[in-house]
Figure 1 (tube, rainbow, N blue to C red):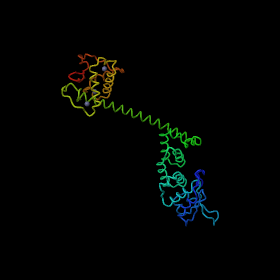
Figure 2 (cartoon, protein in one colour):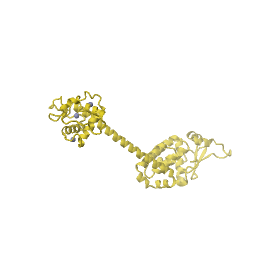
Figure 3 (cartoon, rainbow, N blue to C red):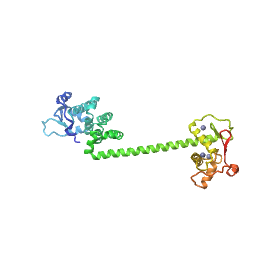
Figure 4 (cartoon, protein in one colour):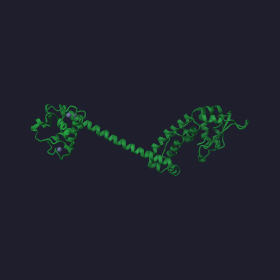
Length: 341
Ligand SMILES: [Zn+2]
Ligand SMILES: [Zn+2]
Ligand SMILES: [Zn+2]
């Protein structure tokens, strides 16, 4: 984009009279700014030079003829936008209405003439005014004017509302005229999708991990302190406690333990028992004190899994009168006086 020709003439020219009204502000200027509509805006070279290094270098260029008038051409944007731009160079201000009307032109001008404060204002102003209709145009401008924040914001909106954006004129124009940007947008959407999937998977893994770690805590708590209906046998069976802080997990686990204690198919064929085995195995795999642990079968499973690496739980004889073989067991009462090992 050259300083003298910001874009094609498609922006159109507002009536000169309207533009002229906004130009009477600096009548004693020593430089004339010439706009696309042929409008001349008088301004002060020193002010322009201090506000924009690009204008400074234009002003510092030697004149071809001593007598010739100093002029600067700012073409390709509406006259009024140039007037607003010049006023900003003087006052560092522009109204919301001006931003609404000339935001994209002002962004282009601020980029070409290196006016960071205006560029910042335009980036913010345009980001606030993004719509499905203008997002593709603003995205292109954001890329052209090196405004990464605005560019990313547009990309995100296109990604979130792609179905709707796809049917806009802006998208159709882009497809026909800028296939490289179209490809970049499609790549962005693709990457955002896989990022989303990765995050979802990570969250699911985290939640499973949390569930399991809570189940482990509850298992130890049931087997050492006892909860509402299951507890260690050295605790009085009638002395049931009230619901604990993790009771939703604890209750399910107690039901599972009660089932496990009485199920005839716990050595195979029962999915609930299989789940209990998995929890017991998980516990024994992380248990730091299997010798004194009160979780049933902890020591046994530790020993059995070190010998075999079988997927199913170790086979426990239903009659544990020969329990001395498996010393290290701890008994757990289940319900009223019913003991699990
Ligand atoms: Zn509990
Ligand atoms: Zn079962
Ligand atoms: Zn243990």
